[in-house]
Image 1: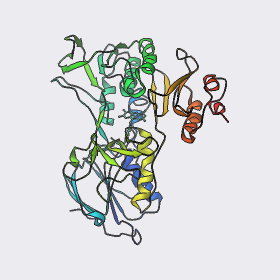
Image 2 (image 1 turned 120 degrees about the vertical axis):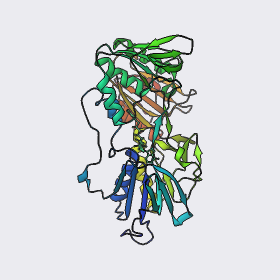
Image 3 (image 1 turned 135 degrees about the horizontal axis):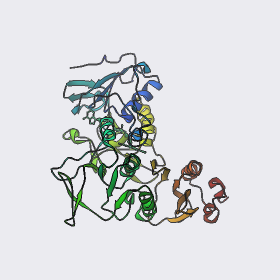
Image 4 (image 1 turned 45 degrees about the vertical axis):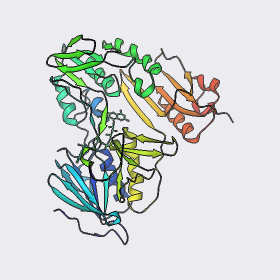
Length: 411
Ligand code: FAD
């Protein structure tokens, strides 16, 4: 048993022991936000990996391109005063309402007054006996980078964000890259096939062989067995077909799940009193979108912890962001803010065959619901603000790249 001291300097009515399961970005940010709000009780941060918390987006970008070797976020000098338990895996918990509870791990147990679930997500794997690699951890990334060499036959399954970024780096290293995608276009699930199709020429220009509408049946020694009975020979195979919340360990705890993620309300509270969830393992209720949204984006893991920390300490703040994701692929910066539906009107800004362009979506009242930009970061910043404020847009002015996005608002 590893007990923190109850009420350790945290002040009357505040939790004395906060345990955070999962030492990724969301877990670390929760600890930082707690300390930033003056919380002086004990914080135990439990991480299954042996590395201290690190940033994942650079793994498929700067690190894979050889521009960085380490993305660690927490240095020994941070002064954060957390009890960091690395190489320890949470296995379950029992909670007793506002009286707190006990988290069980493969190393023992930890009493808590409040518990934060931040165990992230893990990659989905494909059937088959062959070796499939993934790109989720820093160790995955370093091992993959060491393999990249001219002539390596690399098959990447999935033309999503990670697949496209890895293809970029592998092609730059001279590998013979084939990306196999079950859907009709890259990024079809994230942005829709019509937009995803606009990225197809990027693959060809980088010398990447992109095979669309090609489902994989299984990963075998020496290659991929395709669903149409075809075969794709490869020296190395990376599966990049999405992630699943790492929540298996919560079975029997009473924490309600939504499509595998911990279901939390707009205050990031789970169905178990005193237990919160943040980041990729959580699905939060969004009043803005009237839907439960799965984290899965860096921006959520970065910002939701501020709200979780406030509420852990007795607050009642709401987390209801305009969603935001970015990607760096084939030498381009892609940013997508908001959320659109097929009912929204799509308006292009600039020529999508060109090097710099954007696409906006307007709802039936003319409000900007989402904005995709390619190498147009200023447009992205301005668009995000307009989405946030629910501004009504003049589609004609929006479509003109000479007019700043913020000036496309109808007064
Ligand atoms: P994680 O980072 O997954 O951290 C969770 C931690 O909990 C992990 O270390 C895990 O080992 C640990 N854990 C799991 N189970 C247990 C357990 N039972 N007990 C203890 N510990 C456990 N997002 C973007 O918006 N833009 C990008 O460009 C982008 N690029 C990315 C590139 C890569 C290669 C990857 C992998 C992700 C990328 N993302 C990107 C997504 C973004 O990194 C994630 O949304 C973010 O890391 C989620 O943080 P998290 O702390 O919730 O989860």
